[in-house]
Length: 140
Length: 361
Image (cartoon, rainbow over the protein chains, first blue to last red):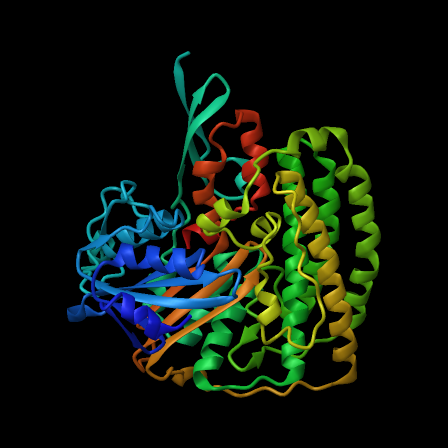
């Protein structure tokens, strides 16, 4: 797949460190890549909290036909567009990211606590997370 | 007809862990399924950010306690890639030997447990009898039956020995597999309970992120081992079947065991030619990955497993993310069980080979 050709269609992306970094229209771009280049498997969505630079979402797409991968990166703050209508597996990934990072995916109506109990406060993998377990104060 | 909400779990033997399925039923027909996971959550990714690389290494076997070698290997190869460490060929061969033995042990346990779910008790004991041989060998070499913590950055913890035990295992296994096939594969009750049940089309499987055996039985040839650097000099054929159903997933795992035996045979020949293991010493107290992002993947028994590490040249990773196959299989249940009958639900959920520690991380 040729990134330059891709760049002509969507003027919202550039290639940085082998990653296609998109500036806007996340769901539309991913759908375009899926439909036109045969990337039919979303291996995973990785979220990384880059502090003041926002939360980076990395979509790892794979094509079983051409046996090639592509990385799509998108920076969000607290809200992001859901791709669960395009890839059903994104439901699972987005649930996990919501639980651990607190990113709310618009269009995914399954968002609720996954691993942690409903009463848990905060999202542990965020860099500004404060560990507030009462057990830490038992020895004070 | 009135609808009924049924709570399957949280402790059901078919799940080999703690999975809760909230089923909505009309009669015996399933209208919707909602998996509830997280009972075994240990915060593997959060712990990684607090521990140094050498402190974290023993923990990763616990992500999937039945296939711990695969996760150790993943972390080791990512760190080795980042630090530019080249493994000697003997270390590579030792690792492949252990991985494939682990794959056989994992599949054997699945066969036993799956048949137990369907109500057949004796195959469970047969499968465990053969798995025991492998675990005994693991104990001899690594000191542990499970959660071996045997791979280290730059090599393995100690050299391998008593290869005649492995020869013995691969000599016994094929005849035992024939025995299983005699009592299971063409058994009319087994066929009735699994044939045509939980049919999974390739596009649905890909859409749900399913990998590994479950995807290969839908006719898609996706086996990461073909591009794996450890398996470069090894000839093997990925098991790809077209049956799509629970019976086919059983058959594929039997064939995968046979394929693993073939790989082990080739490896044994190579291991016998060399002696003395050459390792690269990595100072465990001072492992710092250069700044950047690292990613590796491996074909684990339950599908594609991968790890992503972002490093900022600290002693701990900035971010570490695991991808495990079972997590997506659990998500698939929301679709696969709809429209099926309750008594098939166990057969279908069992056939996907879901391991809950891997889901919950």
